[in-house]
Length: 346
Length: 277
Image (spheres, rainbow over the protein chains, first blue to last red):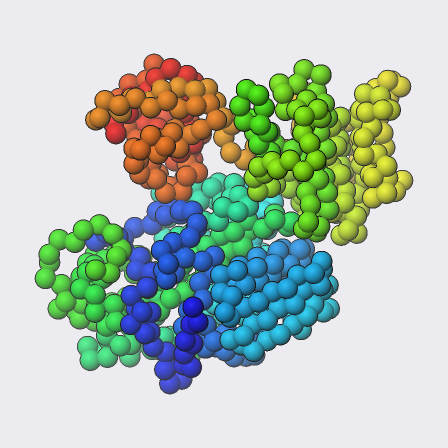
């Protein structure tokens, strides 16, 4: 089925909007009234038709505009894409995984012809057609990892597995929740998770690392993570903080429903076949608080989670300044009725 | 992992891929016929026929290469040569510095030597027991430059000796590699009693407790299926056998209490366990 791609912006005039279907399929992350870190990892083995879990890599109505926003960010700061020299085989693994997945899952939009090492790739939404030799980086206009992730929604890190650890040795990061690839590249699993409060103490990272070291080919896994963003902005990096940090002070009771967005990351991890690396995909979804509250269950639950969120988590996620305004608005939607467990909208 | 249709039932045996990983059309394995075969290697040598479809799982890398090493020492014992050939092929393709040491019983057991020589040229050293040639780890591992990694695939005793010598000589554990096991090994069959329904479920040796419960129509909670998330934590009411905890979740006191088990990866050594489900 053909997707109707939006023409919209994630900066300046912020014309980003979700369709009704876009809101309904939003991966709302709160199944209960309280939130705390856990190893909430499960097999990424498909999902309901139309859901964000259906395919290996979810392509939605924002695809074309998101790729355009990534190109703008890379133009301004090429350092948002980095890859250490020993990762070249992993780069090709990622290109193969994404191309074969998209061509299989979205045949109306992507096509791949493989004749030995001679490959022919067609990306209809972006108007790209490319013949190249698999394994020969000189036959592509960009290095393989940059080439394919310029054409895929979401951020990506490739982890190298060695010394009983996972090392963030490649990344395409243009829509991050305030962390810097230039700072983190080359770090180990616990190093790049260093700033996360509480989770170290309750052993979340010990268990998650051991689990991921055993990740198997053909058995990808997924989890959700979340934060909030003022305006539907993708580029909330430390490098551009002066451009967006002040927006946190712009939230008022009148604009909160449209201005503040819940930002959910569908994080998926895939073992790579030849390099033995792990692809970590961070696929972000944005929905305004007002759009989410159109489903009363979601409005009430989001109210309770934010109201009771521990202060250190709120600080880590950068919500402190405007959270009271969000909670006050959402409290008008919450009659206090008990909600059944689960993330479903209705 | 190949599923072999033996007369006594399906046997699942793991084999090392020795082919070119960039060839997407075929997977290649080498199987030595074991004299005391439990059926797998004898079946492949005698009964398997060209054109016969066999069920194959996705490959798993139990013996990864350290991509930042400055020099690689690859050591094979007997049929343990199979993953060593794959490493040699990869290192040759990458143009990295490496050498191969291959110990085997007699010249006729030196399978794949020609292939190794094509990949590593003069840096292939054979140790043939019938000629009284012995591989001395102490000599092999001495005076190596920093950044050297050593890999061994061979019989269990050889692997243990290799690690012991390397440790004694001050090699860091991170630079000494042998095959590791990914999933907890299958175990013995046992029985699970479900206290709430009074039902009893048999868990075969090659199935996890969670899988057996699901197959029996019970709906135990689960999430990660790898012993990390804690979702399937189950209360134990009674157990007449020893626990085999393979999870990453339960603390030592919880294990010692005998009151908890994670059915996705853990089991008991035969007998019967009663759980609160």
